[in-house]
Length: 327
Image (cartoon, rainbow, N blue to C red):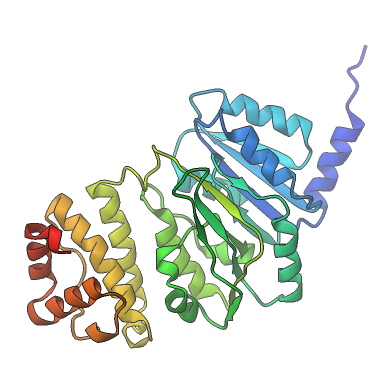
């Protein structure tokens, strides 16, 4: 007796492969059996029919991989790829290689997307077809007393530099609360083996963006993760974050002439101080001639900027390590 082929499943797969997909949602999966279903259901519940959800099982040691397969069997919008463990960047890159959507976004598998988020965002992009990157609200440390709402507001920027400095995007360079035109990733990938991979990637995407927007629509719910890289960042991880900013400054030599550069440089200085405290290394170039201490944000940053002007970045690091309580 011949085994029958499931026509609805085959037809559904055919249609999914050739239909126009508006949004691809890439979700890297590793050791998240407890939170994965909650995360994926929050995405599938967005009510976006022309959407695909790509689950990248990055060699999960628990039952996450089997759970991915189960959800794919139950919902035709879900695609699963299993791969050997390679880290978050490689998992995202694997998802990007499979993505068919006009737009792409990323969700961490221990987070959620608030109900009714994606439809308004996609409607916004339909009305503003020139926008290449759209950032929306995020609730950080969701579900804890420390929950904080990151609200970028409703703004439109004609270039990536204005967005980077005016919104201080360098302090919230997350990939997960943004929708990107997928074509931006044609020649950009997340860096393999580096911590704080978003800080490496966003400046490269902004180089290719013709317009960037922020909106008060929607919410990305970022759960507290005690094992996350931000919470347990040591010298090596912080060095990677600092290296990302040093590389961005080197690749954008016109930035020191931009309004807001001093605040950005002092943001990098604060990371440098942490790196020096952990490793004794000074990596950040001394751009004291380019900064304007009186125009930076906050008394402590002004004091640090004046110290750099007078003594240089290396001396600031040494003073800070000796007198941390003063800063």
